[in-house]
Length: 113
Length: 113
Image (cartoon, rainbow over all chains, first blue to last red; front, side, top):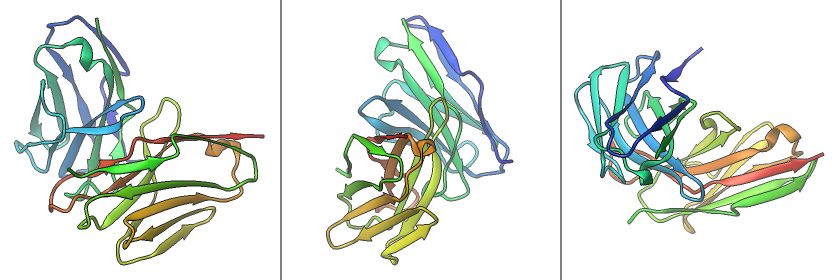
């Protein structure tokens, strides 16, 4: 069964901390994505990557960076966490560059206090 | 900019009734329109998708229709069951190749028995 695994289901961090959210997929997909989900706002694209060491900004990249050192792993980094980054973070992967047929992880609920 | 609007934000139906969720998109170059279902505590899962060269697609109790002229598409669920209760997201591809999907804000469907 195909799988996208996010390392933590819940995380609580302090403002100013550096936060790493990890995502691993076992489907040998080239394309990986980070979305943020907030009530009433739907899913908003933060960053995506279509190849190892490649990254592209999405719609809301401010305050975030990403790392893709290996094909199966895509990390989201909050350089200095702020309270407005409290959210559900969803990682996804796809065989297709346009994000078709996405497979999502279960999400990480991040609380920044 | 590019936008996908989704209505209604909440929908309550009785078991056995039909449910319809509607989305409109702004980018006339969009050519791929998926629908995702998110159950509580899980990531979104693709349930059906349609391309712009097709007007309608059906999969058992679920169907999607597309009106390219009006730039809107709809999800139809017939004979609803309690297990259809979830948040549903529509999405549209962006006109620029190699970019990611843009999602609607979601519809919370409740099916009562």
